[in-house]
Amino acid sequence: LAKTTQPISMDSYEGQEVNITCSHNNIATNDYITWYQQFPSQGPRFIIQGYKTKVKNEVASLFIPADRKSSTLSLPRVSLSDTAVYYCLVGDMNTGFQKLVFGTGTRLLVSP
Amino acid sequence: EPEVTQTPSHQVTQMGQEVILRCVPISNHLYFYWYRQILGQKVEFLVSFYNNEISEKSEIFDDQFSVERPDGSNFTLKIRSTKLEDSAMYFCASSGEVYNEQFFGPGTRLTVL
Image (tube, rainbow over all chains, first blue to last red; front, top):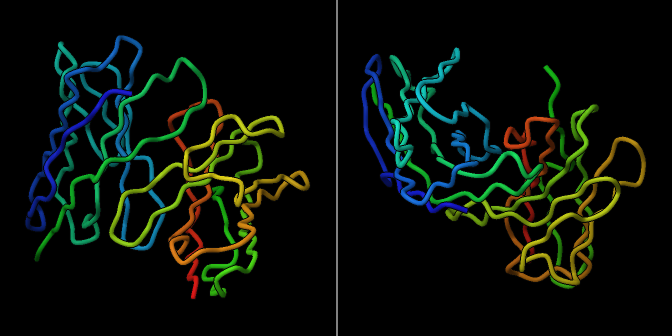
């Protein structure tokens, strides 16, 4: 499993766009990039997944450069309820179901 | 929207006692998992389960742990003789065909005294 590195914490204000970057220099050809969100005392929740270029859903966007050695989760116009820990995970989706390996994640604090 | 449910939400037990944590995965999912998170630490994988058998387990998942799918809906984690260090939040998860999209339950907070 490719190792990921992301900032320990980030601060933002309501209404701002937040970009969290994750480094995964050893990403393999078959690896996908997945982001999860965890609120205090809750289980992680899948946000978005991508392989290359840009992916967008109703919650976030995921930007992946051509070399795929990093990825950026973009949260548009954050609110207080976006305060959570965000995890970047890299793994091979083609080998079937597999465990998720969580790092320490990025703790995002959104203030009024 | 379908969701994973877990019971109880909080379990307090004495060291050495057996506990069973229960989960009801999403009904059409076939892959099931248990994770745990000690307070302030990372979410750690314990075990994955498919087709009525363990697919993978971590070093944490020693002989004191077992999993079972006793019927078509429940998925349980049993700890035979709890230790103080088993105190943690235990999350059940399930997934369908999109393997990396695992749906987590709300967790059971286990406190071992």
